Structures are given as C-alpha cells and as structure tokens.
Length: 383
Ligand code: ADP
Ligand code: GN1
Ligand code: MG
Image (tube, rainbow, N blue to C red):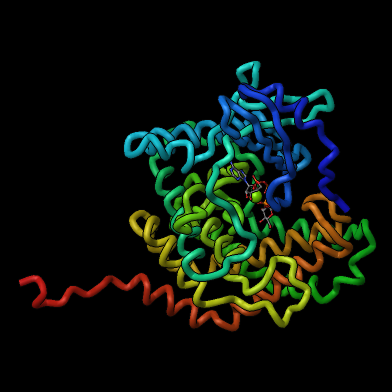
C-alpha cells in the first residue's frame, strides 16, 4: 500500500532552494490527491504570513517532469496574459503561479532525485472531494469550461504529451486485459464480477476516438484531470476561481474534461464509497455541470462534441473504473491507497455509477437536448 508519510521529506531544506523570502514557519501535508506529495508551507514575510505549495512530483507516473513544467509554464503564462488585461489583481489567484528555484528553474531536484516544484498558495478558497449542491457543480464546471476557452487560441508548438494515450479508453482496457492475464498480485479470483463488468462494455470504449479520427472532434488543449477536487471554490461566494493540478494539461478532447467532471461530481457519494446502495448519478448535479460548462464552452464546441456530452460522462467513469481495477490487479502500484482493497472499492464505485448512468441514459440525453435547445425569441418581443 502506498501512503503519504509527512515526515518523509525535509520540507524546510527543500524550501530553501526556492526563491522565497522570509522566515520558514511550518508546513503540513495538503489536499487529497492520488498522485503527488503536496505540502502547504508558511513563511513570515514583512510581518505577514504567506503560504506556498511545495509539491513532490511523482516521477513514477510522470516520467519527464521537465517537459511537464515546460507545459505548465507555457499554459499558465498564456492564461495570465489574458487575466492581466482585465484585472491584474486576479492574475495570481485565478491561475497557478510557478515559483522559480534559486537556480532560476521552475523545479528543484533533491539529492535523492526527487523532483520538486513550488506554487503560490491560493488563499480564501478550497477544493472539495464531493460536491454538496448544484451551485458547487455549476461553479466547478464553469471554471473548467473557462480554462478550455482561455486556451482555445493557444499557439504552437504542440504541448508535450506528458502521458501518451492518457484517455485512450481502448488502450486502458487492453492494459486491464494484460493485468488479468498476468495476475501478478493473485487478485483476479477476487475480482471476477468487476472484470466481467468491465470487459462486457469494451465495444463502446472507442467511440470518441473514432469521432476524432473521422475529423468530427478537434484536438484541443485540455486539462485531462478535471476531478471535482482539482478546482478551488472561493470561500466567500463559492465562485469557481482557479483550476489546479495542471500536470496533465496537454492535447486531448474537450469531452475528456467534461466526462471526468461528470464522473467526479455527479456521484451521490465518495469515489471510494463501499456501500453501493448509496451510489447513483445525481441528475440535479449533471444538469448544473452542463449549465456551468456550456456557459463558457458553449461558444466553441462542435456539434459532435455537444451530442456526446452525456456519453462522455459514462465513458470516462468507465475508463477510470478500468484504471482502478487494473491497479488493484497489479498490486496497487499507481494510485495512492489508504486501506486494503482500496482500488477495488474505487473500481466498484465507478462501475456502480456507470450502471446508474446507463439506467438514466434517456434522462441525461434529454437534459442535454433541453439545455442546448436555442431559446426561442418571442416573435412580438422584438417589435
Ligand atoms: P495531485 O496531483 O496529487 O492530485 P494536486 O496538484 O491536485 O495534487 O494538489 C492536491 C490538492 O492541493 C488539490 O486538490 C488542492 O486542494 C490543493 N492545491 C494544489 N495546488 C494549490 C494551490 N496553488 N493553492 C491552493 N491549493 C492548492
Ligand atoms: C488522479 O491527481 P489526481 O488525484 O487529481 C489521476 C486521474 C484520475 C484520478 C481518480 C495523473 O487524479 O487521472 O482520474 O486520480 N491522475 C493521474 O481519482 O493519473
Ligand atoms: Mg489533484
């Protein structure tokens, strides 16, 4: 099992390698991400306490952190330029800010070969693992939609593909099949039902890729990891103010982002809830996501993208379920786990959610159709 041990890293020593002025006060592990080791550290600068995020990049997952930081810097610079034009005060609150190392690099490599980066910590806002109400879902989706919109005119060269085939669902299923065949952790026997569920749905795994290859869906610069807890909501007014976790920002489909919003936000329970009776797709949250996302992305989405909004939710939920199941069968080597069978529980929950979306397919599609329908102007109102 992989766990985060807060004493594992000498954060004050790491922190000294970044361009931060003032006295180091304290640090604590931060957030609930499944991949990196994230810490919030406080400093006293000129009499005020200022916080930064220090983050160890998981280099097992991200094999080329230098290319990753290049992507992150280009993307954040592009968005910041736009923010500055409208409101300079928001330019370090609505997009991540990378803090340079003392050597002038956007990262620092420690003596154990760990790769560290530092961000300005965005204050007065937080992320949630589970959405409480439609307002939160709306705000999160609007923030992710806005992020895509801000990147619609992102200039060449093409961003590095940080993890190739990250959302290639058929390849994810293929990796599952390999894990079943190899059965390295001897867990196949205990996961028969989940395996059967996953393999039965293999035929629909390639729909979005086929549309992309047919030219109906454009490649865009997208976030690729639009989990509900990767967006910060303002403490005071609940507004979705900043999208974080830019590790996987790279070329992809707009619907990968919408799909993962649906997976992580419309769930009636936690991602790893064990009591499956509590898991279903909440249509009120789905509707809020649609409205929030389309508020920003409605202006640029193609017809094929619009028509597949509901399908994308089911596909990405299935895909992440397949990934959790694969990791379980491989002995928990990718996602952080905090208990025995954690990845299997997560897979279980994702598949229950897929089932709930299958049952509510007609309702989801009609919600999409209703929201996309152009508002009819009252003939006389114009006179
Ligand atoms: P992981 O890749 O492991 O998911 P994240 O980059 O998402 O790591 O960081 C983990 C959590 O830390 C996020 O979900 C968010 O709550 C918080 N976080 C990350 N960066 C910032 C930041 N700059 N300001 C405030 N909170 C942040
Ligand atoms: C990981 O990093 P985090 O916790 O935001 C994963 C996503 C999965 C998600 C499932 C780089 O996201 O792809 O959808 O867990 N990130 C990576 O909760 O693999
Ligand atoms: Mg995250």
